[in-house]
Amino acid sequence: MEHHEQPFVLAVKRDEPVWAVLDGRWGQPRADVIAAAQIPADAWQRLSAGAGAQGPRWSDGARVRLARRPLTAAERRWDHWLLVRRSRSAPTALAYSVVFTPAGTSLRTRARVAGQRWRSEQSCELAKGEGGLDQYEVRRWNGWYRHMTLALCALASLAVLRAHLHAQQAAQQTPASPRHRRHTTSKSQVAKGGPTSSRSM
Figure (cartoon, rainbow, N blue to C red):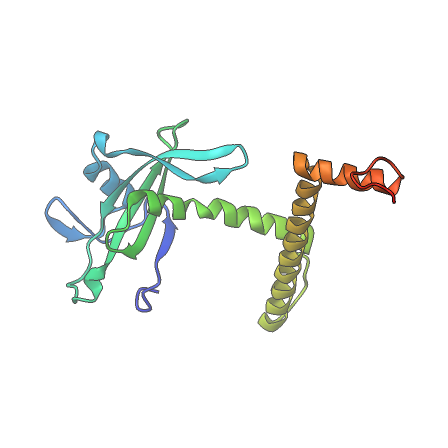
């Protein structure tokens, strides 16, 4: 993915060895060791991982630059970071991610992208319930791929239909403007033979 310059956020375990410079030495210490050694107490920022079922999903976040091999001019346009997110309700619960992004990408953007994992998990659960994503019995990859494609296409179709239905319901519930109501009332009176502004000859 790096060769194709594809940004990514990869969740890792706390004991995952990652390349970094620690205590002046270049090596592969654990992710939690790097975080404990290189993230000061005042480096944590309150970040939103996006909207959840009960509103914005807030957490504390910090980052540590990871070491890379000697870089070419083109490779310097990209950065490797260790992103650490801390639960606000349980400060000892930390989540680690290795992030590959264009240089200059903000911490808030990295945290927001990392938070999309929740949306992906929700979408998979929805696809299982409404599209039968997990209801297959196949022996080869081709059969599995076809089933996944059809199930996800079905889910996409349902999502479009649901969006159109919600838009129609919202339009029906929107109160008409005073001008529209006067115009509708005038038409109704004419249809019923009521008073109009024209005089019969």
